[in-house]
Image (cartoon, rainbow, N blue to C red; front, side, top):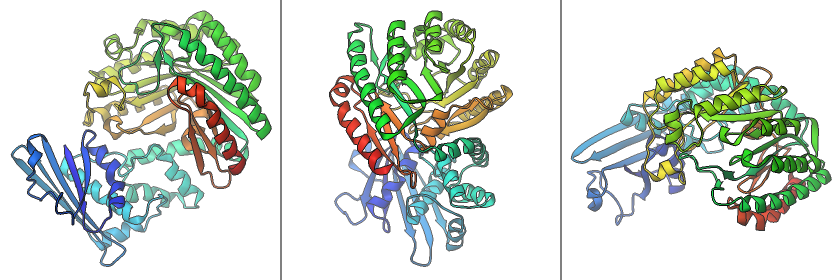
Length: 519
């Protein structure tokens, strides 16, 4: 579909606030803006257009926000043409409805006109599609930050609940989920506030045995040669040394380390030992350090490698099957089987002293509710300490996007999520962090579950942005937190590993300067 947004009362910059919500309803749509007084480009409401033959579906959405000038009202219509079929829906919100909406606390950074725009678009799109997104007008990554901000502003529980429901239009079950997550996070965030010089450190290894069909992250294959990885590790070692020296000078201490990727366990045992020894030697860290390794691909693990990781100080391991169906694993390009997962997990469980997480994805091609149920039955038998469940997000740069796979926005995905919630709770796990992504299937969320007391501090800190994150390696991000108001400045290493090796020093200088100013 092509969607054209128009308004007599909103500027282009105000209309742009509705872009993300438009794409949440119509992920494949091309959205354009049009000035009402631009006669050369105006598309008439009868939807006549020269390139109609090219467009299977065309929608004209006109919305006017009358605020703050009285009388307050929101008026809009959405005309759609598919072939020879024409439909129109319209909405009107009067002053009484708007006053009720604005009587609840609102902590968004956008002005009230943009808030009202989103509520108008939500009403139009829901009427047009027959589907109301579970997260209402929210399209951002971190919905939990709304509750944290409302609580910090001193609003009582009743007002916070009313805001989620009436302002943001979040569905009741998602609002309850959000409140449960925030409640579990609260003591961790208080600790982070009270220890502002504790930071999280991420180190990235952007290499994989093969590329998954849904992956949009920077990940390079080593099928032809390991020489790129060897060059990369040498440069990464230089950044680790420099970062450790800076952290000591700045008085920063790592509360958590996260070795991610890519697939860090693609390294040989000798390479793993050298890299971790370098990290532990140069990065100042707490005695009670949380140290996670993303061991996502079972085909990169062995008993000896697992023993080496544990002996090096790793105390949290992530083994990521994504699904327990061989046909799906083959379809998405994973170079392992369900049998490999079971074998490696068994080996890891024989080694005491670490927390084991497992990642799953709902919405994988060809999978339905029954497939998720069967996967979860096998996962439940394994009894992982943490379970992280993602709703598939098809992003640019992935093979699935290139091949034209579209998201299923139907009820089936929400049914899958309900199965996940029930299974996780039956395993004694509770939701402790969540986040959302662009192009996420069903406009849902990714949820991390943990058995009580086994939550991942790194995940909480990076999602709620109460703690500075120092990112090392190609594609890694750093977030320097302003201790006065917990605003932040972000820096990003180039995703290309070769460019990273040339330029990591620039990012190092920028984040050191930001820490000096904000810290």
